[in-house]
Image (cartoon, rainbow, N blue to C red; front, top):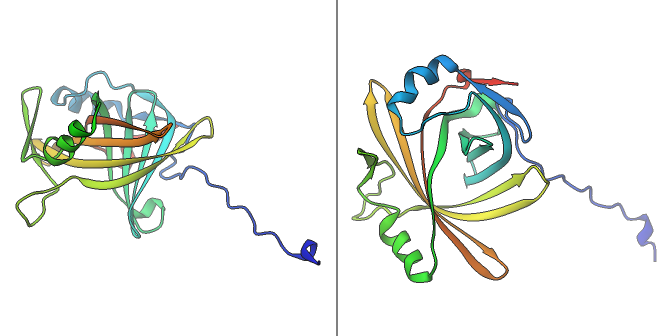
Length: 213
């Protein structure tokens, strides 16, 4: 009868994470000098100097490893690997990735083929370049890495997507690499499977290559 005296649990706001000054709704400039020299060697073409962040993705790979993705209006995203707390000093890797191709997957058979054969292969060929598989296992096969991305959009909506990914790389200069990633994406919409095979390509950034606006 004295329920009105009970304390209510405080509501924890679920908001998009921020790091290196990157935030949902924010913007940044890329180092134009670096882009001028490196872009001719890459598959991407015409990267915008100024980019606006439209959504933020969060992938918790394990209790200590987090992947953050800052999706921009330039059809790409900055991907950041963090070990430990989400603090600037714990950032281990920064890449700028661009969407290369997205294909819908219509049925379960094609989806299974993607998971078993298409996403993970020893080599990947794109625009005359050969990329080698990065994530290897000790067995005969190297299946895609499963993860779930939680995505925060500018309109306040939050969604989750199951992903099955494999990373590839090619070296084009001393300590210079271009990356490609194949990702099988799956989410349930109106009790139906919505599935895609997504190809992205990109390259390494240093935090100093990003100028927060």
